[in-house]
Image (cartoon, rainbow, N blue to C red; front, side):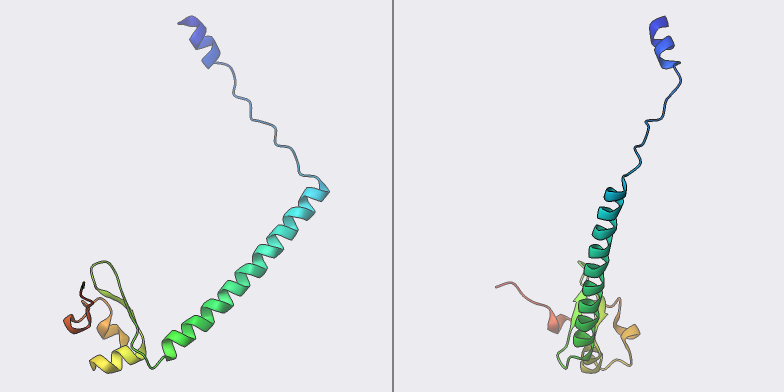
Length: 102
């Protein structure tokens, strides 16, 4: 038991962290630049997709697993006769629009 206490009482030493070399830093910067470029492209694509969905004449609604509306586009609001998206969000998907299993 005394051996365990002596081992446990030894001071904790932090592992020495090796500083990266100049080449490693350059490589990391290139990787981050590549990632940032890809991220900007994804953001552009998402904006285009959002505009397409929001301006679509087709009714587009998204529900959660409990069939409560979490997103509707303007066509959806107009079709159901609501005054705005706020009136539809959180409501259950109307019975007439639910998919049925075949």
